[in-house]
Amino acid sequence: MKIGILTFHFSNNYGALFQAYGLRNYLKDLGHDVEFINYQPEYLEEGGEIKLSNLFSKATLKIVYLKFVNIKEKYFGNKQKEKYFEKFKKNFLGIDESKVYKSKDELEKANLYYDLVITGSDQVWNPSEQYGIDSVYFLDFKTSNANVKKISYAPSFGKDNIDEKYKDEISKLVSKLDSISIREISGQNIIENMITIKPTLVPDPTVLVSNYYNVMNPYHTNSKDYIFCYYLRSRETIGDVAEYVANKENLEIYSPHNPHRRWKEIGTTVHPGPREWLYLLNNSKFVITNSFHGTMLSILLNKPFIVVGIGSGEKSKYNERAMNILKQCGLDNRFIDKFDKNKVDKVKNEEINWIEVNSKMNDLKNEGINFLINSIGLYNE
Image 1 (cartoon, one colour):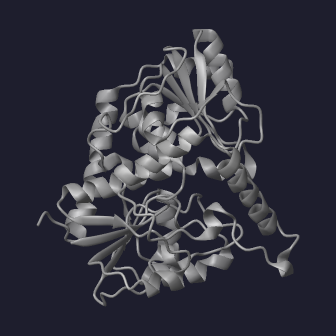
Image 2: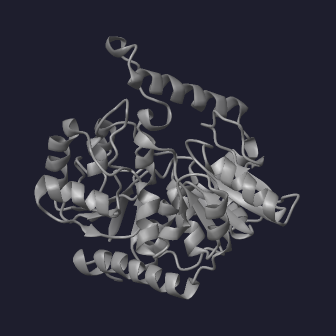
């Protein structure tokens, strides 16, 4: 089969690229011809167009901020890190940068042929602040094959609820898909409440990878004994947790550079690409993260870890994805929502039953495989 995948494969984001790698790698191993549809809308990485009619809105501020970050990284970012990302996208994702589509119109004019198109994983169904719903990520576009099958594999809304203003549009778009799966229970509930169809719950495609060791590439550090701290959005709480564990265990802290960081760094900043990021995580003594994919890869590589909540109130919605996988693996106790030395010590010192956890992860993997093979008829030709 000729298969096209729509996801955030172009982002210089570790989690986005590993979930993309996981799905393509699995489908390729089945013997199919698989490629990423190189749709790269401007609003996702560069903010998009500023509208004079909406000049002083929150959405416009987001656009200005994203444009600033994009320019800063382009001209002042770490060049070696950029090369790492470019090599990964070319060698492990097979991306052809000569074919880029910036809009739905450009995508349809390309007249692409596929037997099957898949949207997901990642937060492809999460409406953006400045753009809203992008129907392309719901596969609402024409290809040259009128009989193309369109399905979702583990997309995420990124939170546990959807703004009322988007529900009608989302329900219409989702209803047109031939088969629907979703990554989180919260997303399953959102869709079921909109179209009375309960989508299949499947795991993030990082689970579909059997061996990550051949993906890793060494990254030099001054210390062999360190905490790998991968965090997003805020250093709130996670900074306290990481520094407390580091001081108590006499460990260094290495944190990957975050271009969106507006706060004091945690430990020493490093600049790995995807393969080097995975190496750093795997060779650490301990992982402390507030990221979903930081959590996923820690579990898949059997690394001792702590997951720290991202703030409270409105920010707590960002904990949904990590909490979901922790519950599925029986690791709820690894989550800390506020800094408490006794709680941190308890989690840090508690052994993880990896045999039990790996068994549950294998069950999740089989659910994903069953959806792809049995529900949709994928097979090794």
